[in-house]
Length: 132
Image 1 (tube, rainbow, N blue to C red):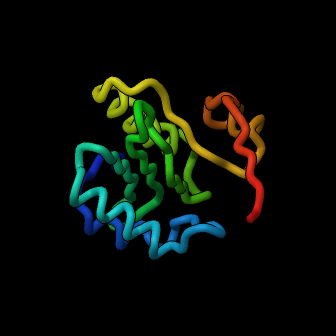
Image 2: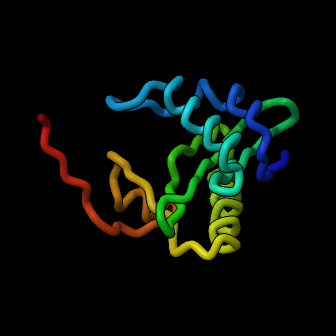
């Protein structure tokens, strides 16, 4: 098993089936955003992938938003230990430190307490919304 950072845009084809879409963006739109960022500003995005042989088993993707790393996508095959995911996050953390960024942030609809226990994040703020 290997966990490493890649700057190869073609890796996104491997990632596509695991991209988490939401009510605002499709998988294809997210991949297009990531691909554009990887090509136009490769220094502003970090893609850490975990492979076992020829199989993608996980990834973590972060990019720069102001002076923070925005953790936009992350996936880990449930057959693998969460330590694999933590190593991928560490790659993104190291990259963020090299860029002199402040922290890693992300939005989730999952339990903040569960994410805190499992991954070491702390709840920072709430995002409020109002439909138009």
